[in-house]
Amino acid sequence: MIVQAKAKNIRVSPQKAKLVVDQIKKMKPHGALDILTYTPKKTAPLLGKVIASAIANAKANHNLEEKSLVFKEILIGKGITFKRFRAGSRGRARPILRRTTNLTVVLEGSEQKTDKVQKAKEENGTKS
Image (cartoon, rainbow, N blue to C red; front, side, top):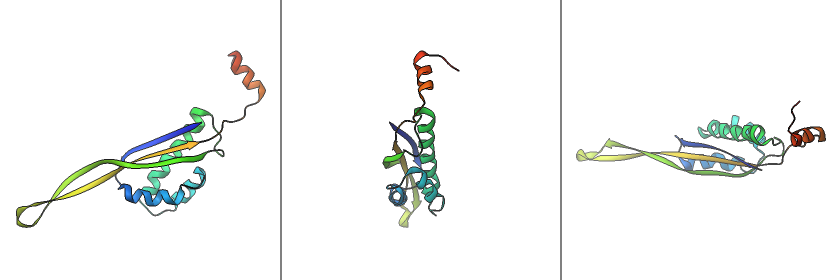
């Protein structure tokens, strides 16, 4: 089962976000959260929130085990660019580009094993 979570227009450049993602892309999501709490970059807590959201989506919506989750992919894309201007020499304007990032975390995992009694109740449509 595939689960994803997104964060759009984060006020960090994609180049800086890739530095943090390269540290955690080969890890398990739960272990990556531990590493991100001690990473001194602006992107680290923001990426941690997206990973935590993906884990919560997997548990709540798809009934997946947290231990079985692995990163399928972590996508870093360009968001919108804020364009500002600063005074330059001889009355000219110099551009300032404030870049943003779109983060997408895709997790893959296996479903929890439920006992036979619960499966039988779900098939019959009865609730306990």
